[in-house]
Length: 282
Image (cartoon, rainbow, N blue to C red; front, side, top):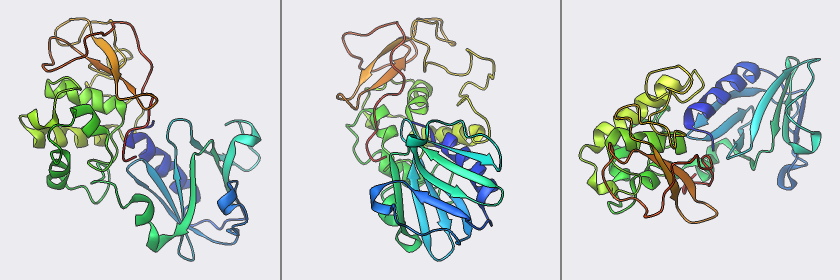
């Protein structure tokens, strides 16, 4: 599932391409909205909210989409070949004189009144990259269930909106705690929340989710994706395992020397599956 900074970049690209443009063609290829007539409306803006995308249209309508694991938005200028996938994977299409925004494999395509956007995103916590960012409220929500595993609490979008599996693992490392440690054991939750916001802010206009400050390939993360490789801090081999119940479990990575706290009895130093699974409160 994309991190909040990835969704921020998608929103920025779509906003640049569509904002202020009149829709000359529009199709929502989902049963609930297949007959929606959007052509002739102007696109006002495209904004991110956590991992959600809100395309606001003239006349008080909002197209709400979510990428989850496989979705993507591409913009093709007029005459450019569409290369994002076969036609049957297209779930949304927004055409203007400049070109066409095409949504492939979008698991969420919802048309709603702009005044009703809270139906789709009102449950989200403070957005790490949004104008509503409130670190005090984020800490309060994070600690509301002190016995919850740290990585799970970080992934819950009802606490902080925008953290995915990469950042959840990296923030556990920064905190010096394993992903299974109870969130109530965080010695300085305010510092971790601040660090989370700094990470996403630093990466919102670049790819790679760089958490170490080192942009070289292979040096961008502390533990994520580094199973079996030496920890950049202490050279102990990074471990990997699974957290959560199938099919929503996901890969976790940690350094057994730098991170204290509980860990599963059976782990591996071999690379695990990526960030599989859908965190709660998406």
